[in-house]
Picture 1 (cartoon, rainbow, N blue to C red):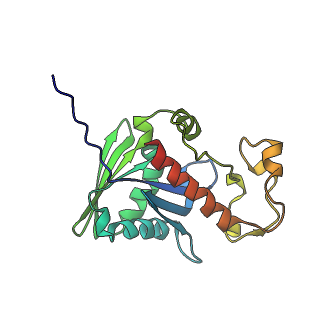
Picture 2: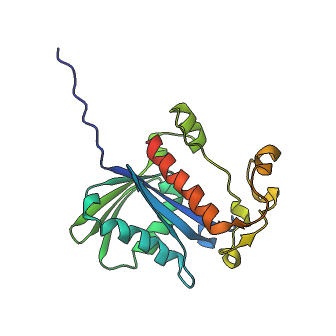
Picture 3: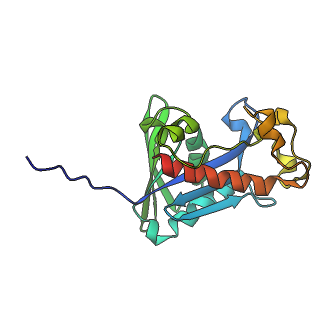
Length: 209
């Protein structure tokens, strides 16, 4: 009996959204940074003055959909079905040039097919393929990029361009004192730190799928 041939799909990438807001519900949260990665390429986006969360998400997807080389790509998003899909569907539904076909299961989104002109891409939830948090997944695959620390509870609408002393340790989740002490105290730049963290996030997603 001959060996079974395995065809690997190289047309894959990842998307990640960073949000701020309260934990009272997804309607109270806003996207302030986002990015996408494929092999050897990453594009990052940070919210501009007077730009809405919805416009930012549109900017990310139009960047993908106006790149003909990405036609037919599948983009993985960790926890698409229970989190990111809310922001994506809410943002793109306002663009009448974009059509979306979501597939639902148990009140969650399994996938979204997006069409724009002659372009088509698909979004999949990597959490449905590999259960667990990203750090655990990355460790199991011996990835050399690990999840960093970011002060999510520090971010709010009024400080998106903050530069100053690093946020208090209480703003970070699951960080040790030694890890916190390694962060430079002054000239901490929220935009730069967000984009640095986001780049790691998109690359980690890509390595873990």
